[in-house]
Length: 391
Image (cartoon, rainbow, N blue to C red):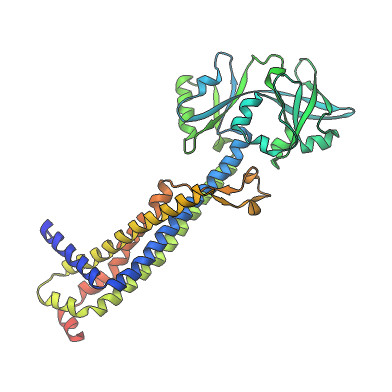
């Protein structure tokens, strides 16, 4: 068919849709509902992944961890595009003791003011306060407090593994995260209280939402080729990475299943439409309309209906997502209170991405083309004489 014929038969297909207004509306509502609901559910899936990542990396570790950085590099050198914050930390292995009780652990020297801005550990303090600058204070976990028979105000002794001064520290606060590595093997004290704080240091880099850690690491490697080691959260926490991938896979399967059912419904409905309007199709064939043109008319009817319905569903899904996300999200704390990936907050904020925004309408459109094949093939293969006998 030439362009003029395509335009003409497209108008004919659209006219068929408008003449069957109520039936078209019923099918459109089915597509609109499916698209809008799945856009919102996909945005919720992205929001759940964001929440797991936020609760995990923003609790302490950051999106990127850098190791053994020299004094010649400062936090400001790591603050490239997409970076929200850079924290300087110094780790000292040793033994923390109280009276005759002792525990091997890692002391993390921190800058308390900046830590409280970018990490959520302060939300997990169950007694006392964050350690303060210029004070010989320490923040320990509930497990360590029980093991050392300590509480806020208790005087502890920390003896580093490597030759250094012995620290006399006062417990400023006690935290509990329900994450084994944090609760059992690490405690925090102000960086300015650690001798030799100008030596090699580690960093926790926090990124803006949606920024790829791998791209930021590539920027670092371009600035310092092969000299320093940086690792993303996905490398450090492969279990969380797999869980997020599984979430996307599950949502993709749901989208395919839903639109598979919708496509079958569309195909069956258009078979009914064809039988109902067999008179018109018989007259068109008798007038010399080719099988290819008849096939094109049916396909365009389905395409027009789905395009309009998917567009409405897209707008409706975006609106629902916007309203829910700006209204404070959905609080699932009651269902996540014992989940380590929701240790800080169980609030989910739906977020639209390419996956959540385009996945449902594109899938609906592709499935609609498949749904159009059956009724279009049925009609195009019927002989004109057979159709006229049915009238």
